[in-house]
Length: 197
Image (cartoon, rainbow, N blue to C red; front, side):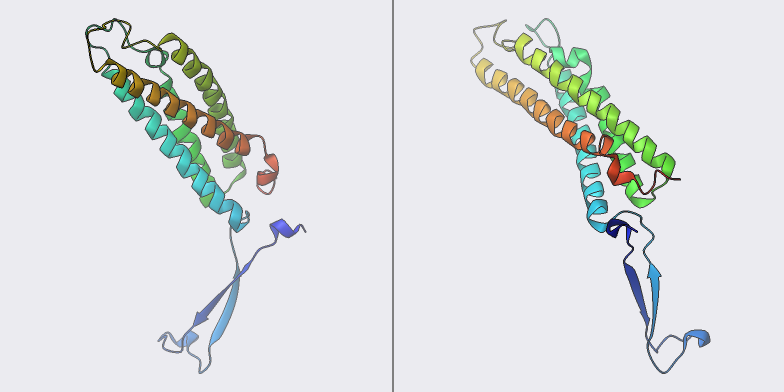
């Protein structure tokens, strides 16, 4: 038996004030139960935390996509490239789903849920990779998106800086999401305990 798969016992102590007759005793009673989770406590904490981060990044991607929705105004002839690609919306669906599956796996690990979580994290890794490429293209194609159409606007440099800042934030979210997704889709050793079902 591997030291990583050893279960930690849980002790329950019943005080003598319990009124149910079968539990009444003049002395304290200690009963041990094995913990039900197959993952070590440190891994379950990481799974829950990283799943919540994936959900948060999915929501932030969606909200940045909504911000891009309001950029089609005169004199700008089109939406930004990253909005046209739809990346903020389809990536948010994948990131939220992979985070939700990771949190669900921490709560109730089954063999099918392990495989589904690995598949969703693999799809999220592909989406994050595609997002990094699309955002890099967006930075190149749209670097003068706001200032290239109207030179008389004095707010143009500030708005362009905000636009580039949002693209850089999306890039950072995609890179972090790529590392989180890869850590749970490639490293099958973490899920070895449940794959035997």
